[in-house]
Length: 220
Image (cartoon, rainbow, N blue to C red):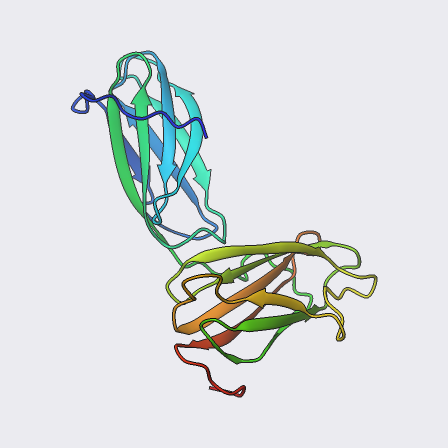
């Protein structure tokens, strides 16, 4: 990913990064401002709550204070928790780090008023079970993004699907099958599934109850 590790003895005292807002919801925009660098290129990278690192490219620090700015628009599927943005001057070696918190956003923000539905079968499933999903009400032939949000806030992408001419993403006879757990199992509690039409902007959400032990199908 092109991430650059900090040197063993970075000059951290002369560089700072501020963030606004310090707490942002999924789907919102966060702005960073760095200062105290030389007139140099500054490499940036973002560390997620689960330890993943994403390269944010390079910004150029300018002027006497050596300032730069960077903006990130959070995805609605980004996990909640504490994030860190790191900036390292490629000439000076100066490093600064700032933290910010991502909270759960409104999954319906920006969605159209058209109706879309998503159904999960069964409603109650064990941690190593399988769920079938059926959706309808999307635009004909549009691409529909799907993801799963577990009760602990972790988000997992599910493959994108193409809606039919009737706007369904699955037919009654061919449901999408999603394994709840591959190895360690999902945490017990409510797990949400989201389907988002990229053209229509329609969104549909449903949930299941994940239980620690095998349980008969039914309502919680």
